[in-house]
Image 1: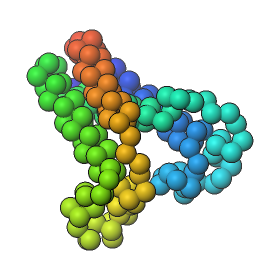
Image 2 (image 1 turned 120 degrees about the vertical axis):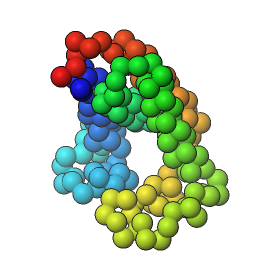
Image 3 (image 1 turned 90 degrees about the vertical axis):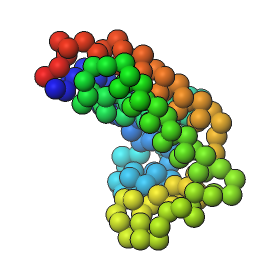
Length: 160
């Protein structure tokens, strides 16, 4: 059974996250969006829609949305929700810390990964990314908010 409401909340979050990148980030600094025509980017033409929160909003949304989407595929149980949210918290923290001083995580990525499309850009993510304590906070808040939303939306009537 899939909880449609949880899936929908997760997908909506991902769409908002994508909007942050299209509107408030330069397309040449975003892997997926630098493949799009420049006219799709609102970065150079419009005002910054997400302003201050736009910096860490993607970290918040990533943890929240993927917690919602992943959990929507599992039975409605608080323990399962907690474990899934903790896993997305862990992933977010590792990715943020990997952008920190020393870029230590690069050494853990096998060279063969560079040959895999999309995944090959993961080294660039760590090398070119910037560590931000606010992103760590956003990942924590996104996972926590996801857990609370999962508890609120875990009703079986939303299952298909």
